[in-house]
Length: 194
Image 1 (tube, one colour):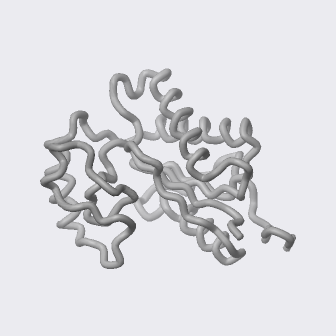
Image 2 (cartoon, rainbow, N blue to C red):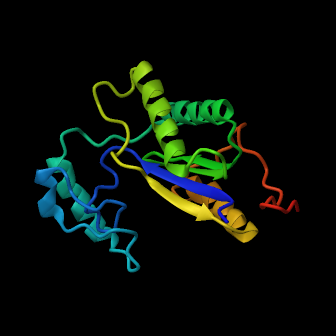
């Protein structure tokens, strides 16, 4: 039984359909990106080297319609606040969140809304907030597509994913993020309270 969702989505240009790491795409819709490589559905077991990734992204930047942008501290705070507003509005329980310069991680307890719907709500609201703030006009905010959904089934899964998300900013030399909408995980699982 699914107890929660690890939701991940990326900023425009950061995880293309024919990404060397693999993707959730089945096809490359943009013709000029097809020469970059074949689509591999799912995350590849053996990941490419940093040099291979840099080469791929350097080539991709030349082909993309828009410049590839990262989120600055102001953007990150706005995205986090907007995610928090959506969590409250939809009645979600969030156990972890990291807004990175090029992607977002959110760990949500199972809810009546499906994982894909949640990502869509978050993407639409954060895009509107960034556009309204004059931060992304006329520029796409998120990579097209449904993002990634990891399904959480056990207490151990929750604990591992929370720690992974918590440490994500630290891995790139940024401080740990503390969001007021993130609740402490206390061992909840369907039919069990720890």
